Image (cartoon, rainbow, N blue to C red; front, side, top):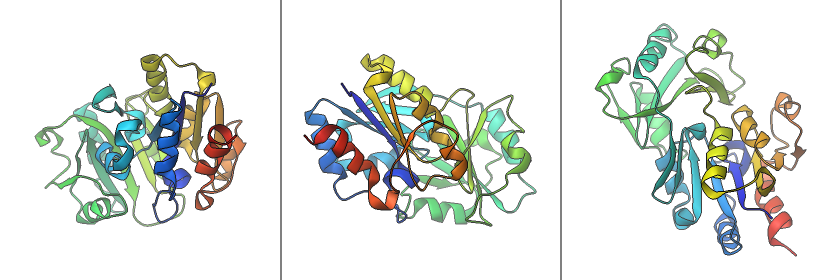
Length: 267
């Protein structure tokens, strides 16, 4: 019996316009009536996720910030707080890289010192809570717990080469690509898979009772923690060979909701 369905958003559930499938709220309602929890699992901010799914918010689990922050209704299932000394060192490391933009993410607010980043993340496309600060290196002036940091390459829409930034802080945190031009940092061992483990413990679930959907490398551990794993046709080719999972249609075809309906809602 399926008890949890978890899906990534960007590149998986959302289309290229960052819009949800038209029937997603009906699908969540139908799952809720069957006693199946639905989880949105994303590198995005918690507040952004809760706004996106506002009509069904109370029927869902939110896995935000790549698993660093997890909530069910008003219950915090996980909140993995990063070391601010580490965040400061990251900012210093990229100071001489004008193509990089840095975003510091707290529980419900993000922080940047780049106006272009501020405008992008507060746009309708992402709908983040963001504060524009004078200098992100002064991270100790931010009176917030930090759960994730994100590095964006503004010079390309293709797969970016983050070079040594991908491995430079490996002894202090985990770095993972969440998109072609975005590199996310969180505490070592924290990912969507670790979030699934905590949800399993909280609700007494087995791996065989979980289905998940993803498209990129920040979904890998979540897919591995699931009894049934599906990846998108539009996934990077190296992602398709990184895990044994069924390849379904594209995010433009609403393949996730179609698969959910075929697996658990029809018949």
